[in-house]
Length: 229
Length: 260
Picture (cartoon, chains in turn brown, purple):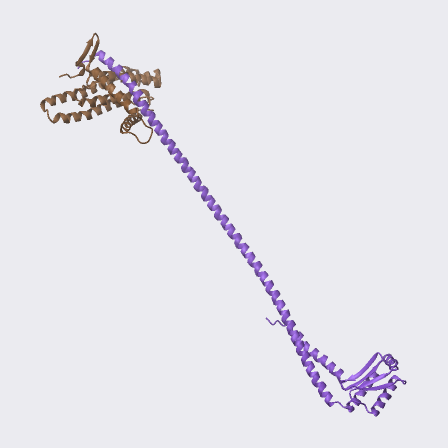
């Protein structure tokens, strides 16, 4: 039994190592892109919408609303990043119920990559919005003694993001596999249904935490630090 | 739990590519469509608001016009009422004037008719009374009465002014005709001639004439002059006096309004 799709190597040449994680990621990317393209090709500006367009508009409007609520800023700047995080993680987790589909978020490499993206995006957005000096000043607030702790905090929360998502998805897959061995009839079905909920919640948590970090980095310093879940 | 560096880097690149793809094919079109719809709805709402404002303005305009029309109607009604009252008053005055004129004309006609009737009645009454008296006197008259009538005639002659009497004397020289209704006897003729010569002078030629149709009395006729004392003259005087007496009440009664 493979705990991570990284262990399924389909092609390897030198340092290039094409694992199932990458392949399913590409599949997922292709699926999401084609689906988006297919739906947005027939967009209408009328008040009568197709169900698919309605679904996408609800999704995008919901993400925008969450970003607006957390950041108190215009969500247009953060929507592609935060929205893609949520959609990718949610789609990946939801598709885990499909037989033979290995969820990319079950790979620590994927969750680490996503956490690194957040780790890099936070200072980029912060510097872009507030400037180098104002952003870096947050690291020596309230006293310069806090600088090492703030840096450790940045690294630890990135690590926490990666491990939390990986752990939840991996544990769901492992528990499902184990239950399939023990009670192969009904219980795994319930566990898979629970996994759908858990996957959505994890996607929401990852996206909302990333939004909180971005908000903390881009908002004017008011002495409030985002709290982790 | 293992971490593959190549996979991490590849997933970062994959994620960034996915960000670009979804931005290109999902967020962009969806937000654009939502913004366009929002703009469209806002435009529709704005248009509806404008139409509502326009409708409100139209309603206000029509209400103002209605109020103005009602005020104008009231003004016209008031003018019509005043005009009707003025015309009514004018027509009433005109009718009163016409009625007064007709009444006046009728009153005058009535008075004229009444006067005519009274006069006719008076004439008839006077005529009948005179005729009756005249008839009675004619039946009572005789030569003796004529003789008595000579005295008043002579008395009248004596009462004349000297100049008048001289004029008569001058005229009598041309002849004097004495007319009576009854024949005078010789003595009375002589007495008459003597009295007249005494008054008018000598040289007068007398002629006696009897006119049975004449009234009782004596008439002296000289060229250009006539002097008489007859009952007819009295009756004529009586007739005139009676007419005056009868006319007086009629004239007084003419001031009364028979319509009053």
